[in-house]
Image (cartoon, rainbow, N blue to C red; front, side):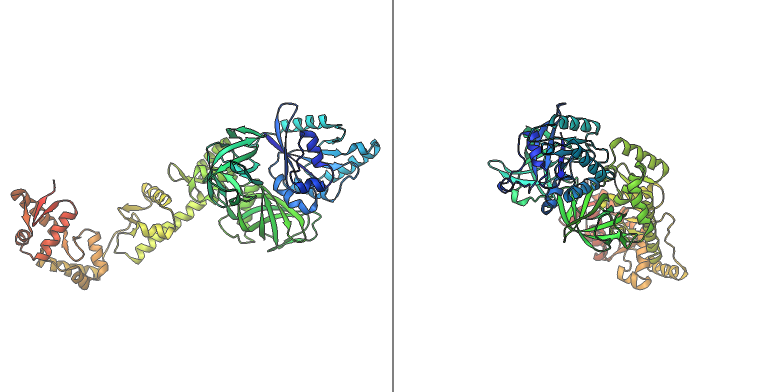
Length: 623
């Protein structure tokens, strides 16, 4: 089911037209009915002659309620621009027309209403001429103009037939598997709880689904669904949908929030956009000015950061980065409107190009402008490449989702990027754009090289220290190290990462200290110098290097042996255990003519590495 929306000046008969088409008056509020003026969004449903069911959003026409109008017009598939035949094009006609054009509504019909008040066809021809002039540079320049009367029902059959024709020519909404329902109404249904309504895009929602409200992050479950006032098990992309939610109270939900599946979208406080300032804007748009942004059903205040220019003149287009006071949910390709807060004026609008930029851009950076241009104008590979750049290191699904490309187009683009080397496959799931990967590789190698220079007598940098310096998640870091090790870019030894060419080498002075230390070990191989004595003799770095190169074996915090002496002690202890079945600490002490300190350290070490097990005062071989 697709959705159409009305637009036009106050009192030009929008609501009356919808009532005549659907049999239901869209004005719900008593105040609206009393004043005969639409204040809030109204809704209706209609079955077209070809059997297609459509939803209708009726919007306020009065300038005081233009922001309510914007909450409902964003998700429509076609617009009915309603113009009263007795008044013609009026101020809000022009503003609503400008909004439809900025939002690039894909189809539309211009409806001349109240024709029963104008019997003179020449007058109607003159009105049509004025209308054609008003729309000639907009999205509705080729839209049909139909003459109708809601009171006499003249022209209504032609209107519904034409509406069916133009919708049939437009493709159905894409289903990208990521449902998103901008909430334009929240209410409580007695006995059921919270209900939200909106136009569903990008996917489908089913009864029983877990859902999340963004940006609040609240989660609940779909208790029931309605489209076209009918209960459904599944609502599909493009349908006007009411969702009954359990687990969330109605007062916890705001109009402008978004209902989706958990984890599929992230709110943002910054967006990169292409923007067009309306020709009839009262003044240029300056850097750092404030404006209201309307996107989906949401609105918030934004600070406008002009990129590549100091100001935009009326009618100009340019790049802007919007810093948002409140978080919103947006995706690449979304259309938006900017309005001046006071006095109220529609400034212009455009398209979201990057909904999750990494940070504040330098305003006059050519590389930033080039990247944004690629996202706006580029081919599928260009778009996917920019999405990969923005995502950093990410699963292919996340990159494709960010690109907003269709599945087949994205697959072809990814293969092309992989073949050209512009996209790097890190493992079965993770990918990265080459510039990002190249920069990360350079940074990684620089950190390892610097560590080798600072600590030449160490095998390499601890994995956790390297991970911390790179500020990567465990998932990405592990994939990165594995990728480098397989290609012999780095070497990994347990918890240490190093360059493949790195070796521990002593200079002449250090080698002399090593030889002097080793003479002390030779003089008393089973009662050697303590760790502290070794460090006093040769220095901590040299002792650590001897341990890391396995020339010394540390069996406790204060006891080290030469490797050959350690191996001999272990083999003789095992032989004694095999001979007698058990051994005491005193027997080990006497076996090596050493002190209790060294015998105890050796046995506790053998316990720790699983060679022996303690049984009272005895040690036995672990079976």
